[in-house]
Image 1 (tube, one colour):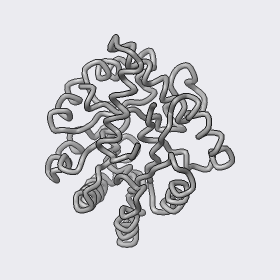
Image 2 (cartoon, rainbow, N blue to C red; image 1 turned 90 degrees about the vertical axis):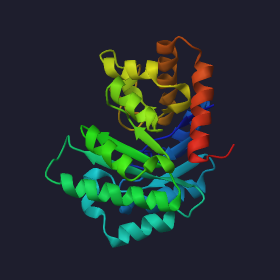
Image 3 (cartoon, rainbow, N blue to C red; image 1 turned 30 degrees about the horizontal axis):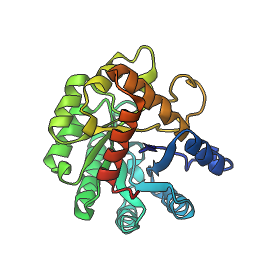
Image 4 (spheres, rainbow, N blue to C red; image 1 turned 45 degrees about the vertical axis):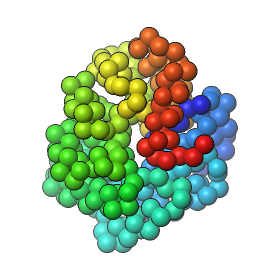
Amino acid sequence: MLIDTHTHIDSDEFKDSFEEILKKANEYGVEKVVIPGVNPSGFKRIIKLCEQYDNVYGAVGVHPEDVNTFDENAQNLIKEYLKHKKILAIGEIGLDYYWDKSQVEKQKEIFEKQVLIAIEAKKPVLVHDREAHQDTFEILKKTKAKETGVVMHCFSGSPEFAMECIKEGFYIALGGVVTFKNAKKAKEVAKIVPLDRLLLETDAPYMTPVPYRGKTNEPAYVKFVAQEIANLRNISFEEIAKATTQNAKNLLKIPD
């Protein structure tokens, strides 16, 4: 069994094929998925999908690209939805300096506020960190986020940074990038992360792994991420599947 710990299949492009997407995932051995929020306008849909499908779980949070949607109402919504039994974490939250550096201070402020909400609610955080490694790490350390659990989603840092995160007690989540031929850093990270700190994800519809690179990603394809990591580590697919599934269950408290 595999768990896709980060997939945006609540987006409109999956609206008319959601059940088929879940069915295909199940056929590929992916039995549970976690859908993170990115802004308050999408929270209700995530809740609805969680309530409609047994194998769907969610998270709520404001993405760094959507920081302008974070206000008192958004904060209250996050706190309220975190009480839902199938909302497992706060996410996707963090820092993104790739697209827009004009709101760096606001991103940091909103990120920290959401981490503190997570700590209060005793829920893990799903962290988006793009070209903001040091600031992201400092905020997570400052807030003592490790006490509630940290997932470094779609990890894009160096092997050295990965080990810094591991020492702090964070989990490293890897997706389709690890299958790309030229993704040397991601492959090195996949080789060295302790099995008890590794998670799998797709980030669908983005980051589609080989052999479907260039097409729309979906939860079923997390199988290819697991297989590539197994190949890189020279261990069995089953070992990767067992370890990452247990990690997801332990951290996110996903029931059997």
